[in-house]
Each structure stands twice: as C-alpha cells, then as structure tokens.
Length: 223
Image (cartoon, rainbow, N blue to C red):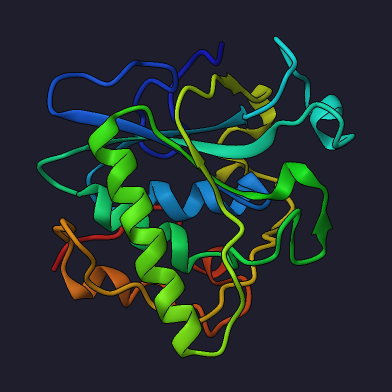
C-alpha cells in the first residue's frame, strides 16, 4: 500500500474516504497525465495511481506493462461531495481521453491502457452508466466512434510504485501524456448535478495537444 502524502495536495495517499467523501477509479490511458487532470479539480481530496481490473494479487508495473496481468492503469480519486460532484469528475473523465480506442490510448497500446471506470457505490455506478449513454449520444452527433469503456464495481485497487505517484509534479519527470481527447463535451445527463463553475473547465483546453502537461500543478482556483 502507498504511504506518505500527496506531493501536491499534501493529503494522505492511502486514506479511505471519510464522511462526506466518495471514491472512484478512472482509467484514461497512461496514469501520469490522467492523475494530474484529476488532482487539479477543486474539491478533490487526494489522488493516487495504481492498477485495477486484473487477476494478479499484487501486480508490479512490469507485470502490468506486459499486458498479461489484466490490470488497467487507473487513478484513484477521493473527493469532497459538497465541493465537487461525481458528475464533474465524469465530465473530466470522458473529455480528457478518447474512450473509443479499445486497448490503447494514443501511441500507448495494450489492455493496461484501456478506458475504465470502477466505482462500488450503486448510485454512482448508475450515474456512470447514464453518463456513458449521454456521451455516446454526443459522440454519435459528432460522427465519432463507439465507447469501449469498461464500467464496473468490485475491482480491487493496487497502489503503483512510489515513483509513479504524482509523477508529473516531481523534479526531473519526463513530461508525458498519451491521451487523445475527442474534443466532444459532456453536457447534462439524467440525475447529474454539476457543482463546478464554467471557469474551471476553461482551464482545460482539449484542442491543445497534451493539455494537462501545459497547466500548473496546483489545483485550479475558483473565481
């Protein structure tokens, strides 16, 4: 299990959600860039990168990279439900990568880079499914492809090695993000309640290649 504090947020990496908090895991290709996208959202308590959805009891990065462990690279996100909603997180999830690419994201190929979303709360799981339907409709309208995202519950999360945690915020890191956003936005969908203002989403410009690499490491300030 990961120990220590978040390199940017200063919160415990491995702490379970407290009252008024919730947790989900998001797979958006290489977890380095994906994690930065999530830790910058106002209301996120902590993030960590790791592996989920596979067969091995204690997978290593090398085993996951082989593509034979069945795990996906994912970001564990814990958030304050009074400040940011699951709908906000789903908006970032769908918009920050291309969920139609199957077992790859950009130049990164293999099942470990598949689009995935794992959450155990039944209400949040239903919201995830509703968001997928809404985003597929938006993709259809834009002439884009079919979503391949794996959505499920009961997937154990394994913390990745310490050097992967908040990788892009650490000195000497190699700026890298494999995500290829579609440019299609997620709008309203059934039972969705967005809490973040439009100004937050202006901090993400998916028309710029590797947008998350260009933004500050600090959380986005509310104005």
